[in-house]
Image (cartoon, rainbow, N blue to C red; front, side, top):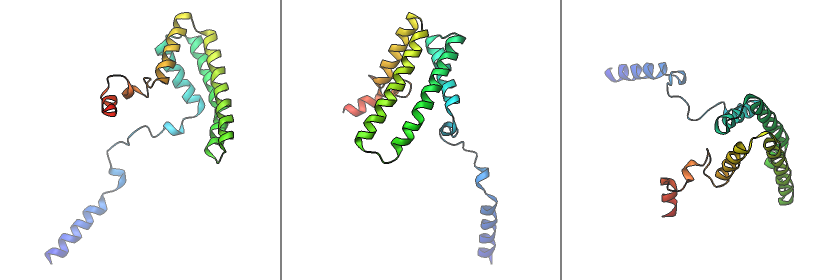
Length: 149
């Protein structure tokens, strides 16, 4: 009888737990994948304004250029997700590079000489894996030390 009561009380206790009571926040940003080009362009413009010291007019121009680039590259990225031949992928990469080069030309047209220098350094750091998303790859980091051993 004691076992029956114990099992019943255990079952009642487990039944009251639900996923809604989980107080642990999800890892990462769940809304990141749902952001559209407008939101991503705005976030990029804010980051550029902070890192490059852009004024309001420059920030608005950056945002417009970034949104244009994202909208131009989106269908190309979608095509690349499908089955494509190596030649098609190369062509898509060339088109995306042309869109990125157009973005760079637009941005460089309104940056001051000091801002251009900072922008070039930002691009170089990103290519070398030392940008915001590649901080762990920077020289002297524990991640790199572990990889070279």
